Length: 304
Image (cartoon, rainbow, N blue to C red; front, side, top):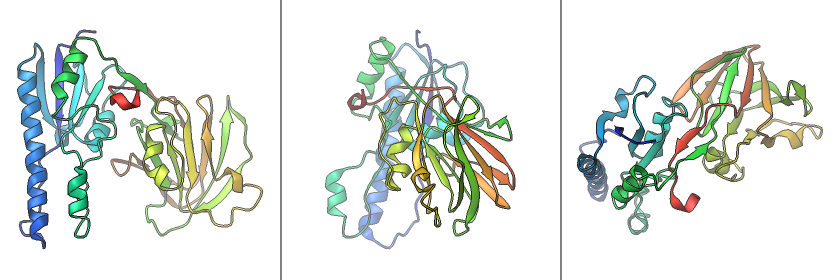
């Protein structure tokens, strides 16, 4: 498909306190802002040299489904790419540009004073250094996007409009509260696991992409990036009992789904962190699977 129209989605320039307590922190924050701004300017200048029409848009102004574009380029980090994915189906590919990569020497220099980690950019295939080369490869059809699985959620048989690229967390709105719920794994409407009744701080379900984020931090494992399976983990289960303890962490295969019954007065579904939330009530039934439309994304070369 020829690329004629490009949406350039931009992370806004960060604003910081006028007088942070540390002089080195002031310089660090000002440098982060400058690096991000320079990357935006470079990407815009590069697009001006190409035979494409392009439209810049701040991610804070993105409110409806992205249509009538052949390519979406996000300039920021994984958060900007995540936000864009919530407004995209499987018809338009996306390229992430990490506008403010972490500098290892800087992290070491300031390790005794503050965390100098910048943007991870795990899903970003480009930085200012290689953006033009990556863009030329895409425009010349020398680089193809990968199909990345996303996660869909239905509540009481009603499909939520937002598909998760990373993960969902189902929990009480108060993080200190105990949640009560049950779950089972199904295939074609038939149970393929025992029913697990839980008291815990909630349950997280991740895609293969999300398995490298909060799921990994919680003790999960990294999945192949192109896997269509999902990984789930019950958080901090209270006395699960020997009969269901092995069910607290596992895989939902691509032809399976997870059914959850919610037995707490309040609850919430957090989609990709705090980007999107949906409230739950006592007795709600959730269906979770990887049947959502894929996201077409140009991945970094080391992931291919």
